[in-house]
Length: 430
Ligand code: ATP
Ligand code: MG
Image (cartoon, rainbow, N blue to C red; front, side, top):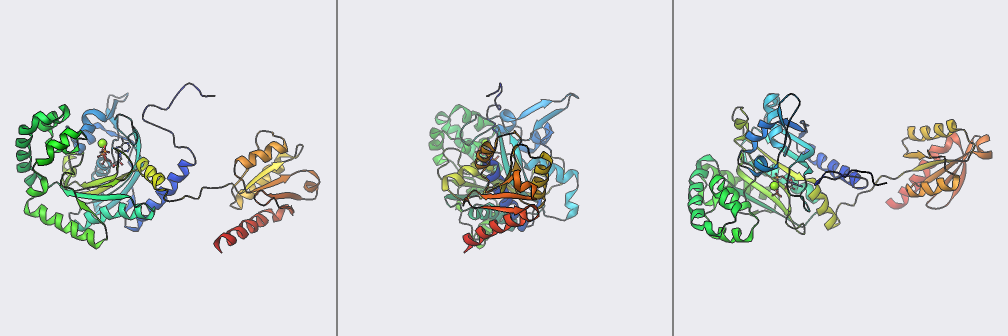
């Protein structure tokens, strides 16, 4: 029964129990974000292509190589969102969200699309949980944004990661730096890979992103951005670091850390996990003081982070962190052949009204096969409807864990199950 089609390359289905773990992990994340004053925003899955061309930058890998761009039937160029920040700023400007007070603190969750080479930790559709604080250039908000994923990962029980931070300056100090870097790269060009030779001309900062060993080696003596920061950027960076200490975030300054997107300024950071191989950044983010202007709005700085959920799930698995209690079927309603289906359905519905997690047979199975099915579903109890008991307004209730069995009046059934479940909770609590 394998059917004819497969999910497209680089995409996958999220099926239980993974889907249930994902839900739980998101709940924990939302709760932390809400606790920090962030509120949810959902933007469309696709945007006008220009939102990304301008918001991410013409020379970035994302825009030049990775976007899913298509013309719709009206001839409009649309793009499946490759990231969440540009759409959130688009919405912030379009809907004048600043009138609700700044900074606007927003968070989002959803799928992102990039046509990358699929490999472990790198997919064409993946999910991000991210947050943006828009409208403030206070270094304290940068440190808040860095501290939230740190709190999140710790609450999930994760330990094996490092927080790396850097400042990539502003247009003023980046310009002279880029000149120096370009001169250096010219002298080192024979040691660079072909991609980096191109980057050296179009987007030299990106060279630090290259994963080729030869390039990393060639860059050992490269001039570094933190040595070129202007007074304001230096002061901003120093304050961010100071406040990270106040917030109890252990960080390392990594002067070679750059970000993949053009609109970033000043603070840049990543959370690097052990054991994830080459795709070891579970969270990345930074400040983007030029993004709002790039999208045609008034200057308004912002800072945000984005957690890659697939990589997060893998990290959780590797560390055996965050054991999730999966939902379990409380009760399976089985029925003896010849029993009125209406009565079976009534019992099923009444149990569900009582907030019990209940299911039944819809295949006309024999009682024996129904018991087997109940086991496969992981049911705790089975109710057997039919026979003599049915005529007396009673049913048989069996505890599949203890094999105990009772005959219970129909009106007492939910209560009896609750009691039995409660007893068990009592035991595990004590
Ligand atoms: P990388 O350097 O790994 O390509 P990036 O700099 O492109 O990451 P961002 O755009 O900052 O990543 O996205 C934030 C997070 O989203 C990353 O830290 C990562 O966890 C996740 N992510 C990015 N691209 C992918 C992908 N193709 N598949 C799965 N997760 C991804
Ligand atoms: Mg990338």
